[in-house]
Image (cartoon, rainbow, N blue to C red; front, side, top):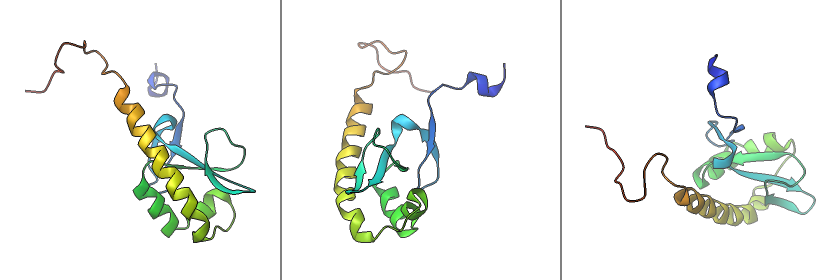
Amino acid sequence: MTTSDTRAAAPLRTCIGCRQQRPQSNLVRCVVGPNGATVSRTAAGRGAWLCSSTCFHTAGRRKAFDRAWKQSVHPDALQPLEHALRIAFDDLIINMEELPTVGVANDEPAATKG
């Protein structure tokens, strides 16, 4: 079995801010459409993936949205997107905290090194 066969089947995406590859479920997708930029995993169009609010600001400074969406994006057009992303990242963190710890029963403390 090769290394690629043992990987999880979760799709990987690259954050346009930090350029790190992460599972799609850990990122938020931004799409530009006729009504402006929005946060949506299912909307049609070119998507730009982000892993944090910090990466949003980095991507804006580096004009990464222009490259990802293959069109010029005015900085003012990103302002409404910033608020939507803040809400999306809050939901993402809440959902990740609700995930059970793998291999640990509810009444047992998690094992530590040492």
